[in-house]
Structures are given as C-alpha cells and as structure tokens.
Length: 573
Image (cartoon, rainbow, N blue to C red; front, side, top):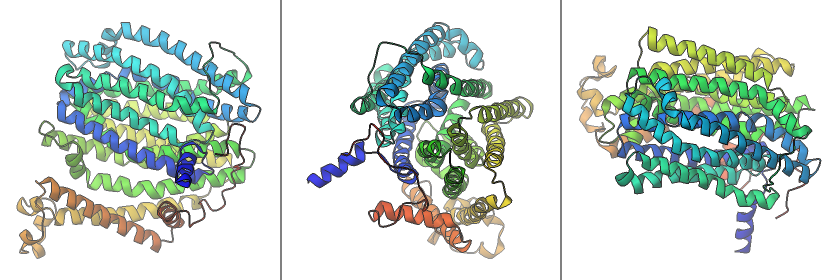
C-alpha cells in the first residue's frame, strides 16, 4: 500500500523527465479534458437552442479578448523560458519574478475589464451587428459576469506556467477538467432557475476551481503572493519577449472578433455551428499539437546551445504529431455527420444544424495538421528567444484569414463553413512558412524532411477511402434512399442489404457503425504505415507498450538527451 501511495504521490508531484513522458501525460489529460468539453457542449445543446447558445458563446468575445492578450500573449512565449533560466540562478529570484508578473497581470486586467465591461453594450453592437438589439443587450449582461472568471484565469495561468517550467505537468493538465465540470454542474443545477445565466455562473465556478487546484502545489514548490512589483532585468526581458507575441495575439483577437461579426450576418445560430465545429477540431489540435508543443518547450529551451539536439527534438515532435493527427483529421471528414449526431444530437439540435456543423468540421479538419504544426514550430522559435519571426508570420496569416473571411461570406455568400475554410487557409500559410524558416535557421532544409509527412498523408487518404466505403456500405439509409455511389453500382443493386446493414436512426446502431469504421480505418492506417517503413509507427507502438506494459520499452525519442538532474526546487519524493 505504501508503494502505491508513493507512486501516486510521485505521479502527482514529481517532474516528468523527458519530452515523451511529459507529452504522454499531457495527451492523456487533454483527451480527458476535451472529452469532458464535448460533454459540456452536449449538456448545453440539451438545455438551449442553437440561437440561445450563440448569445452565450458571443458573450465570451470581450472577456476572451483580455484573457488571450494577457495570458497567451505573455506566458507561452516569454515567461516560461525566462523563469526556467532564472531558476538556475536561484529560487528566490525566480519566485519574485512570478509574483511580479501576477501583480502586473491583475492590475492590467482590472483596468481593461472595467473599461470594456462598462462599454459592453456599445461594443457588441459592433461585434454582432446581425443580432437584434435585445440580444446584444443580453450578451453584454452575460459578458460582465464572465469577466470575473477571466480574472481567476489571469492568476491561474501564471501558476500553470510555473508548474510547467518545473516539469510538473499533471496538476496543470487536471485544471481544465475542473473548469468544464463547473460549467456542466452550473448548467444542470441552475438552468431551470437562471436560464442562460446558469452556464455563465458555471464558468465562474469552473475558473475559480482551475485556480484553486493549482495554488497549493505551486505554493508547496515555493510560489508566494507578494504585494510588490519589482521591475528587474528578467521582468524587462519577459516584457521584451512578450511584446511581439502581444501584437500577434491582438491581431488574432481581431480575427476572432471578425468571425463573430460575419457569423452574426449569416444567421443567429450560425455562431453556434461554428463554435461546435471548432470544439471538435480542437480535440486533435490540443491532443497532438498543443500537448507536444508544451512538453517540448522546456527541453528546446535547454538545447539552444546544441543545434543538433534541438533539430532532432523539433523534427521528432513534428513527425510524430503528423503521424498521429493526419488519420484523425481524415476520420473527422469521413465521419463528421455520425460524430455530430452522437455528440450534439438532441431534440432541439436538428438535422439542418447537424449538416451545417458537419460542413464546418470538414473545413477545419483539412487544416488541423497545419494548426498543430504551427504550435510546435512556434515553440521552437520561442525557445531560441525569437518571438519576432513567428509573430510576423502569424500576423500575415491573420490578414490572409480576414481577407478570406470577407470573400467567402460577403462576396461568395457561403454558409458558416466559409469561416472555417478561411481559418484553414491562414493556418496552412503559417505552418508552411514557419517550417521553412526554422529549417533555414538550423541549416537543415532538405526535401527529405517531407518524406514522413508524405507517408502519413498517403496512408491517411487510403484509409479514409476505406472508411467512407464501409460507412456507406453498412448504412441502411444509403441503400433505401439510394444515396452516394451505391445506388449507381449495378453489381450490388440486387444484394439483400437488409440482412447486413444497420438502421442508423437508432443511437446504438449509429454508435456501433461509427466505432467499427474507426477501428477498420485505424487497422488499415497502421498496416500501411508498416508497409511504408514509417519510423513513427514504432514510436507509437512503444508508447502504447509503455502505457499498458509498465515501461518495458525505452522511452522515445531514442536519442533523447535532455538533462534531467533536479533543478533547485525539485524534490526527491
């Protein structure tokens, strides 16, 4: 029993010693968080119509604007590298830096949130011109409450950055679970009394839980709140590194605001379709892009003096990410309708809503590989203390996205899927240019670098074709209504299809068919990867064996040489 307790304590509080172990842990928790996020969306879809939910999602626009600029504009690119290096010079100095950043963040947040909160009514007439005046007023009222939740996040994400700098990834990865639980419980318990304000209260509960679960562990490691602001060289360094990222994030928020604006001009529920589709595509992006990128950043930051190791770490991360994410993207395209029906299908989320959301998912899925790749590549530049290059590229890609938004919605008059496709176009440009420039930086550009991507792409396309055929072949409605290609094939028109097809009007049958198609696609993809001699397939198998057969395989990447000696605040327990 003591051994079990010790192992549990080590897992909960001990550092992760390699990029793979950290990424594996983050991936598992991202899956749990994203799945719970889908449960959250399902609960919302059960209690509120798409039109009502559009108001709820729109209310996040102003609070998210502050949060994204303050938090992701600073911590992902600037705080972690500086804090990590400061730890090597002494704990006290590093903790003073963290406390100063918290205090600065709170002050700036209060100024911005009060300013935007008081003027929310006017801002939403600009951000959502397609909404009725009464709806705009309701959105503004919801937004004022949501500002309180973002206040918790401003502090909480400093703690997240601190813990990740110390290679403690489990607690920060658990925090989003509590955030989603807060929204779910708030909706379930309060919706009958508070209506659309119920999930808003749930957001505040979830955000406070996100903060409280990390605070005790951060304080155990040495973090303290101090009522002072000390602008030393390291804080100035964070500001200098964060400035380009702040510019990038500001432009990104303009792009996200434009999405709300254009969506409101299409229809009121259109923004819900876009948000639901975005939630689905964020699962693989977070699982295979953000998690690998976050896990790799501390290692890359330590390898900047050894470009051979730096190059190997970032290329291995990209190859493994592509190997994992391409088949998932293909599955999302092929199975978009069954997946949406299973996750969002309720009495008030009908067929038209399902189809519209499906188009959004497909448009996003094409670009998932580029979104994930950009997340990894940007961390490579951050580790090199170069935030200017990824920022310039990101800003250009945002302008491309905005132009595409206008063309699709106002010129071509597309439905809401046009916004998703515009985002994919911008992400594609960003990832390709980042990949080219970072390889020039490390003197390693070669067309051979694309071989792993090409292998994974071919295997994904072929497995996707098989999945599409299986999905249509065993779906009763395809035979009855002569949908798709089956109605045009003379050779199979006389088959007794009623004996082997499934009536997918029933949830159990739809679930069974969906899992069967996914399993078949996975088997075909892995088989083709073996045939193509993909190294990443062995990495994947090694990862599975490490998870299920208790570390019988050497951690991968095989040549990982990240220093794992304890840093000043590491403990031996």
